[in-house]
Length: 265
Length: 296
Image (cartoon, rainbow over the protein chains, first blue to last red):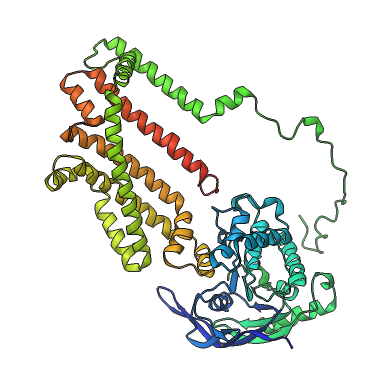
């Protein structure tokens, strides 16, 4: 078995709105192993994005602990690079190349020349070589998302945290991006923790799926999905797993409610 | 309409499907065609502005000639002649340099203080509230109203002028910077903190560039306030040390009832304003916020 990278132990998360104290997740346990494509799946209100932020170090748990390689997570750090859903995560005043270079420059993890080499290589990997001197506002949504992924991967973090990264893209681009993410993973075998509300996306992207129930988020199941991607989406395994997850989330209700329509986090 | 009996046929099934070859669109000419020289000239903003200026000057000239009273309203040609004369003998250039030097000192100090204040203000919630209260108090207070006080504190001379200029720049810039900082998207902040940025590096590498459109707007407002305040202040207490500024030039000419010189002084004020706005600030915008797509 591959070594454990991230351990989340009985984590309860709460945050305050001006009027309420909201409990986002309640005593959630899971662990992510080296090389996992670990997906947290759940409807809106299950606290999955909040959970990801807590792993990122942006929010301390009120109960339980989050450890990465045995060290307690307390502040944000470049060992856990985040990719967000919003396109605003890129710095509009920097070109694609400068955006990818920026985290490496700030953290001084690599020498300047090494950082430039790495930035070039990773931009080529996400197929943006022709656009490295373009500013983000000139790019399409999918290209911006590729830059964000390239920027995070260039730093070689212990784990890549992706918060519904493809939710703001159109359906065709989303599909391309999912395939590209998988082929990048085939080449580099990084560890990724991926949050989504789409059952289909979870099955295709994930090797292991954590299903959360809403209000507050609690663990419903942890499933394997490593053998399914776009090449065998028409096989019965896909439908069976998708049905199983649907049942876990919504009980035995009829299948007319589609979670994919729900864009909220 | 379908009757109540029987199900409607599958929608669209009565119409055949088809696929077709693409029609040749070559007949309409190039998909993109460069505009002709005349079209481009007419669409040019600079040309349009120039045309407006020419029209205004012609109206001025005709009105002044019709009035025929150079004490009340000198003609454009007379104003330009005086303007040129005073530039040739160096008086106007001297006065302008004196004014601009004072302005530059005040403006730079104002910007530095604004930067200092807002950096402290974003560090904590209390700081933000202190600064927003201060700007709410002092931003509406006309700088020129502080001139009597400045004269008591600093006496006649450049320090008083610098004081009122700082006042006019500081609050406008601080207010806009603070608004800019507040509107930086949460994801951009988080991606900055994600790589471990904190404190001054976080402000300098993330907040300031992200808020730059707003900061630049503040700097433009601050510059206009400062320039206005300076000319007005020079009119009130005239000469500082030995050489007066452009306001003093206008004031002196009024005392001599030399209206053409008053006009040439006003023309100088306008020309400098136009230059700073449409050359200096335009150039900064083109290299920053326009290039970055943060402002059209």
